[in-house]
Amino acid sequence: MSSEETGPAGTAPAGTGRDALVARRHLLLVGTGLVAGCAGAAGTAFGHAAGPVRRLLGTPAFADRALDVQMLQTSASVENLAVELYEAALELPAVGGERAEPLVRDFFTRTRDQHADHAEACNAALTKLGARTQGNADAALRDLVARARSGTTDVTRTLEAAIAVETTAAATYQSNAATLVDTDARRVTAAIGGVEAQHVAALALMVAILRDRGPELLRLSPATVEDLPAEVGTAGLPGALTTTDRARPPAVGAVR
Amino acid sequence: MSPSRRRFLVGGSAALGALALGACRGGGADGGAAERNDAVDEPPRMGDFAVVALAASLENLVVRSYTKALEAVAAGDIEEVPPAVTAVAERTLAHHSEHAEGWNRLLVDAGQQPVEGVNKTVQAALADPGLAAVREGRGLVTFFLGLEGILAATYLDGMVRLQDRGAVAIAASIRPVELQHAAVLGFFLGQYPVPDAFTSVEGARPTTDRIG
Image (cartoon, rainbow over all chains, first blue to last red; front, side, top):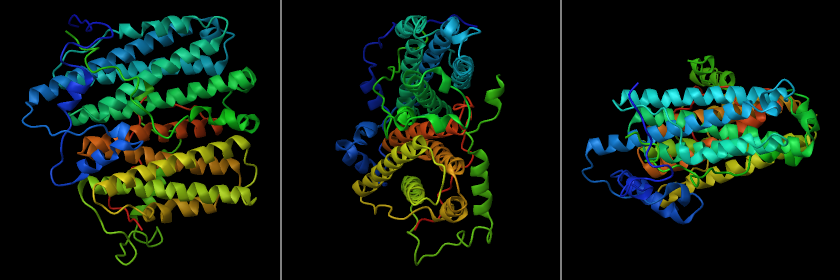
């Protein structure tokens, strides 16, 4: 494996901020009028998701590929961080120990493995593009790993740290999905991003159950729902739309 | 490669999605919904508009299905529905209403007619008969889960087909929510909420579905 390093933690190289990079990417679909529709939607709740649409003229193919590569490398770096977080959490007795709630232990184990699969998929997409893979974690998110470790006496702190990294991952994939040019990269990104959102929902549901009823309802059983308060059941469904507020900038995970 | 990567499924909906696909393909098995009827169907659209219209038609159908389901629960026609299920159904209904409105706003802003009808292909093959067969809470949750799976798969397919980045961005902001619906509904059934590392297009509806 070639040597790899991330870009400066938490920063993007000058001239490659998200707005500048995304501006290079937005295409005007000639003749469909759909772009006009997106511009009109700018003032609505969906305008936040649609964003500005600008004409892209004569963008070299290599520039498109370079941005795709950066986004995939950044996604991989977030996945690597997620694996770190879940592994750190599993070291806690309340999460990975013999006396941990089985659902919590199972969830953290399986989710760690899923994130490893996601990183592998992002790196496979990079290899397909002829680019370098990303084996490092997004260093700017390491405070979340520390927060996950702090759940020694209150496992909900660990769950909430996991929610934060999942939200970041989901937002990053969501943002990238609308910007990626390579079809396979977009397909992989879309296939993964929704799973991160499911992680958020499942974790939020577990936190709500623990806080409202305690661990006795934290079980996988058709009977569980019968005892759940209504408001706890909706804890995993906060909004009609997900946002890109916590998306990582495209270049932060770029391999140099 | 972990086993979870080998098979891509969306919650517990794959079988239901496949059922919908099978029922929708046969000429007579879907109650005649496969044949286009220009007198009642909305006119077909092209390109990205077809993808957006498909999404709107499915959201309209899901809104209709959830609404009828909640009415049936309130009337006592569907029994043993826990409060958490009713609450999630009401929240999910509100989400889908917003999704449908958003897509139609996009169409109108682009000078297109909004989609006022539902996806009649899925309605005939799955939604109407599926809801009619529900008698109790667990069956209701399974029914909802199937609908969410079709939506999620269709959005994933659409996100690759769509050319306009703004439309992709909208789809990218909606699809995760459908998957969150599926995760919570799966948990209500006693299923592991996030069973697979990747989601798939299995069960995605084509733009040739009838809308009316």
